[in-house]
Image (cartoon, rainbow, N blue to C red):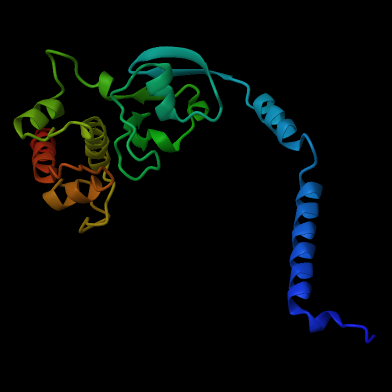
Length: 219
Protein backbone atom coordinates (compact mmCIF):
# COMPACT_ATOMS: atom_id res chain seq x y z
CA UNK A 1 0.00 0.00 0.00
CA UNK A 2 1.42 3.36 -1.01
CA UNK A 3 1.78 5.84 1.93
CA UNK A 4 -0.33 8.98 1.55
CA UNK A 5 1.08 12.49 1.80
CA UNK A 6 -0.72 15.13 3.94
CA UNK A 7 -0.90 17.40 0.92
CA UNK A 8 -3.06 14.79 -0.78
CA UNK A 9 -5.79 15.69 1.72
CA UNK A 10 -6.09 19.56 1.91
CA UNK A 11 -9.01 19.39 4.36
CA UNK A 12 -6.94 17.43 6.87
CA UNK A 13 -4.03 19.83 6.46
CA UNK A 14 -6.29 22.89 6.91
CA UNK A 15 -7.79 21.48 10.10
CA UNK A 16 -4.34 20.79 11.46
CA UNK A 17 -3.23 24.36 10.81
CA UNK A 18 -6.36 25.79 12.44
CA UNK A 19 -5.93 23.67 15.54
CA UNK A 20 -2.28 24.67 15.76
CA UNK A 21 -3.11 28.38 15.57
CA UNK A 22 -5.87 28.09 18.18
CA UNK A 23 -3.62 26.18 20.53
CA UNK A 24 -0.80 28.69 20.10
CA UNK A 25 -3.13 31.62 20.77
CA UNK A 26 -4.54 30.05 23.91
CA UNK A 27 -1.05 29.35 25.20
CA UNK A 28 0.03 32.93 24.58
CA UNK A 29 -2.96 34.33 26.47
CA UNK A 30 -2.39 31.97 29.38
CA UNK A 31 1.25 33.03 29.58
CA UNK A 32 0.46 36.74 29.39
CA UNK A 33 -2.28 36.64 32.05
CA UNK A 34 -1.46 34.11 34.75
CA UNK A 35 -4.20 33.25 37.28
CA UNK A 36 -5.02 36.08 39.67
CA UNK A 37 -3.20 38.82 37.74
CA UNK A 38 -6.37 40.86 37.09
CA UNK A 39 -7.36 40.70 40.75
CA UNK A 40 -3.84 41.75 41.74
CA UNK A 41 -3.90 44.76 39.41
CA UNK A 42 -7.31 45.81 40.74
CA UNK A 43 -6.01 45.68 44.31
CA UNK A 44 -2.94 47.72 43.39
CA UNK A 45 -5.10 50.32 41.63
CA UNK A 46 -7.41 50.73 44.61
CA UNK A 47 -4.44 51.19 46.93
CA UNK A 48 -2.71 53.70 44.64
CA UNK A 49 -5.38 56.40 44.80
CA UNK A 50 -5.81 57.52 48.38
CA UNK A 51 -7.89 60.69 48.99
CA UNK A 52 -5.81 63.85 49.17
CA UNK A 53 -6.58 66.82 51.46
CA UNK A 54 -7.35 70.06 49.61
CA UNK A 55 -7.88 73.67 50.70
CA UNK A 56 -9.12 76.33 48.33
CA UNK A 57 -11.48 79.29 48.09
CA UNK A 58 -14.79 78.74 46.34
CA UNK A 59 -16.97 81.81 45.85
CA UNK A 60 -15.02 83.62 48.58
CA UNK A 61 -15.54 80.78 51.08
CA UNK A 62 -12.69 78.65 52.39
CA UNK A 63 -13.30 75.00 51.58
CA UNK A 64 -11.42 72.07 53.09
CA UNK A 65 -12.06 68.53 51.88
CA UNK A 66 -10.39 65.34 50.74
CA UNK A 67 -10.70 64.35 47.10
CA UNK A 68 -9.76 61.48 44.85
CA UNK A 69 -6.64 62.63 42.93
CA UNK A 70 -8.37 61.55 39.71
CA UNK A 71 -11.39 63.82 40.29
CA UNK A 72 -11.81 66.78 37.96
CA UNK A 73 -12.48 70.25 39.32
CA UNK A 74 -15.91 70.04 37.69
CA UNK A 75 -16.85 66.84 39.49
CA UNK A 76 -15.56 68.23 42.78
CA UNK A 77 -17.75 71.32 42.45
CA UNK A 78 -20.84 69.35 41.50
CA UNK A 79 -20.52 66.14 43.53
CA UNK A 80 -18.56 67.21 46.61
CA UNK A 81 -19.79 70.79 47.06
CA UNK A 82 -23.22 70.57 45.46
CA UNK A 83 -22.55 73.54 43.16
CA UNK A 84 -24.50 72.20 40.21
CA UNK A 85 -24.76 75.54 38.43
CA UNK A 86 -21.55 74.62 36.64
CA UNK A 87 -22.77 72.23 33.96
CA UNK A 88 -21.26 69.05 32.58
CA UNK A 89 -21.72 69.04 28.83
CA UNK A 90 -19.14 67.18 26.77
CA UNK A 91 -16.65 66.50 29.60
CA UNK A 92 -13.90 66.92 26.98
CA UNK A 93 -13.34 70.70 26.96
CA UNK A 94 -15.23 71.19 23.71
CA UNK A 95 -18.48 72.92 24.70
CA UNK A 96 -17.59 75.42 27.45
CA UNK A 97 -20.61 74.55 29.62
CA UNK A 98 -18.31 73.99 32.61
CA UNK A 99 -16.45 77.32 32.35
CA UNK A 100 -15.57 78.82 35.73
CA UNK A 101 -13.21 81.57 36.86
CA UNK A 102 -9.97 80.32 38.37
CA UNK A 103 -7.89 83.08 39.96
CA UNK A 104 -9.80 85.47 37.72
CA UNK A 105 -9.19 83.58 34.49
CA UNK A 106 -11.73 81.45 32.67
CA UNK A 107 -11.06 77.73 32.68
CA UNK A 108 -12.89 74.60 31.56
CA UNK A 109 -13.38 72.83 34.88
CA UNK A 110 -13.65 69.43 33.21
CA UNK A 111 -10.06 69.63 31.95
CA UNK A 112 -8.27 70.22 35.24
CA UNK A 113 -7.87 68.04 38.32
CA UNK A 114 -9.16 69.35 41.64
CA UNK A 115 -5.93 68.47 43.48
CA UNK A 116 -4.01 70.88 41.24
CA UNK A 117 -5.70 73.88 42.84
CA UNK A 118 -4.50 73.99 46.41
CA UNK A 119 -4.90 77.57 47.63
CA UNK A 120 -6.54 78.80 44.43
CA UNK A 121 -9.62 81.00 44.13
CA UNK A 122 -12.56 79.48 42.27
CA UNK A 123 -15.63 81.43 41.25
CA UNK A 124 -18.68 79.70 39.84
CA UNK A 125 -22.01 81.02 38.65
CA UNK A 126 -23.29 80.72 42.24
CA UNK A 127 -20.75 83.38 43.22
CA UNK A 128 -21.86 85.84 40.54
CA UNK A 129 -24.83 87.90 41.65
CA UNK A 130 -27.57 86.61 43.92
CA UNK A 131 -31.38 86.40 43.96
CA UNK A 132 -32.77 89.91 43.97
CA UNK A 133 -29.39 91.42 43.09
CA UNK A 134 -28.23 90.09 39.75
CA UNK A 135 -24.86 90.84 38.22
CA UNK A 136 -25.15 93.36 35.33
CA UNK A 137 -24.25 90.60 32.88
CA UNK A 138 -27.05 88.39 34.20
CA UNK A 139 -29.46 91.30 33.87
CA UNK A 140 -28.30 91.88 30.30
CA UNK A 141 -28.84 88.20 29.44
CA UNK A 142 -32.41 88.49 30.71
CA UNK A 143 -33.06 91.71 28.80
CA UNK A 144 -31.60 90.32 25.57
CA UNK A 145 -33.20 86.88 25.93
CA UNK A 146 -29.80 85.24 25.96
CA UNK A 147 -30.84 82.45 28.30
CA UNK A 148 -33.00 80.30 25.99
CA UNK A 149 -32.93 76.80 27.59
CA UNK A 150 -30.35 78.03 30.10
CA UNK A 151 -28.06 74.99 30.15
CA UNK A 152 -25.05 76.77 28.67
CA UNK A 153 -25.75 80.08 30.41
CA UNK A 154 -23.57 79.61 33.53
CA UNK A 155 -20.57 78.87 31.35
CA UNK A 156 -21.44 81.71 28.96
CA UNK A 157 -21.62 84.24 31.80
CA UNK A 158 -18.42 83.08 33.50
CA UNK A 159 -16.62 83.06 30.17
CA UNK A 160 -17.92 86.52 29.29
CA UNK A 161 -16.73 87.96 32.60
CA UNK A 162 -13.27 86.50 32.09
CA UNK A 163 -13.21 87.67 28.48
CA UNK A 164 -14.10 91.26 29.36
CA UNK A 165 -11.19 91.35 31.82
CA UNK A 166 -8.84 89.90 29.20
CA UNK A 167 -9.80 92.69 26.81
CA UNK A 168 -9.25 95.31 29.53
CA UNK A 169 -5.75 93.92 30.04
CA UNK A 170 -5.03 94.22 26.33
CA UNK A 171 -5.01 90.54 25.41
CA UNK A 172 -5.41 90.33 21.61
CA UNK A 173 -7.48 87.74 19.80
CA UNK A 174 -7.21 86.24 16.31
CA UNK A 175 -9.38 89.04 14.93
CA UNK A 176 -7.63 91.94 16.67
CA UNK A 177 -6.45 94.42 14.02
CA UNK A 178 -3.49 95.60 16.10
CA UNK A 179 -2.04 93.09 18.56
CA UNK A 180 0.03 95.84 20.17
CA UNK A 181 -3.01 97.94 21.02
CA UNK A 182 -3.74 97.93 24.73
CA UNK A 183 -7.24 99.41 24.60
CA UNK A 184 -9.19 96.69 22.78
CA UNK A 185 -12.74 97.54 21.76
CA UNK A 186 -15.08 94.58 22.14
CA UNK A 187 -16.73 94.70 18.75
CA UNK A 188 -19.17 92.02 17.65
CA UNK A 189 -16.35 90.25 15.80
CA UNK A 190 -14.11 90.35 18.88
CA UNK A 191 -16.84 88.98 21.13
CA UNK A 192 -17.74 86.18 18.73
CA UNK A 193 -14.11 85.13 18.42
CA UNK A 194 -13.37 85.33 22.13
CA UNK A 195 -16.56 83.44 23.04
CA UNK A 196 -16.13 80.77 20.36
CA UNK A 197 -15.28 78.15 22.98
CA UNK A 198 -18.78 78.36 24.45
CA UNK A 199 -21.42 76.51 22.46
CA UNK A 200 -25.12 77.40 22.59
CA UNK A 201 -27.16 74.57 21.13
CA UNK A 202 -30.20 76.84 21.06
CA UNK A 203 -28.21 79.12 18.71
CA UNK A 204 -28.90 82.26 20.74
CA UNK A 205 -25.54 83.72 19.70
CA UNK A 206 -26.87 87.11 18.49
CA UNK A 207 -28.65 87.61 21.83
CA UNK A 208 -25.60 86.53 23.83
CA UNK A 209 -23.30 88.84 21.87
CA UNK A 210 -25.73 91.73 22.33
CA UNK A 211 -25.89 91.14 26.09
CA UNK A 212 -22.11 91.06 26.40
CA UNK A 213 -21.73 94.22 24.31
CA UNK A 214 -24.21 96.05 26.56
CA UNK A 215 -22.06 95.30 29.60
CA UNK A 216 -18.71 95.76 27.84
CA UNK A 217 -19.65 99.26 26.70
CA UNK A 218 -20.56 100.27 30.25
CA UNK A 219 -17.51 98.58 31.83
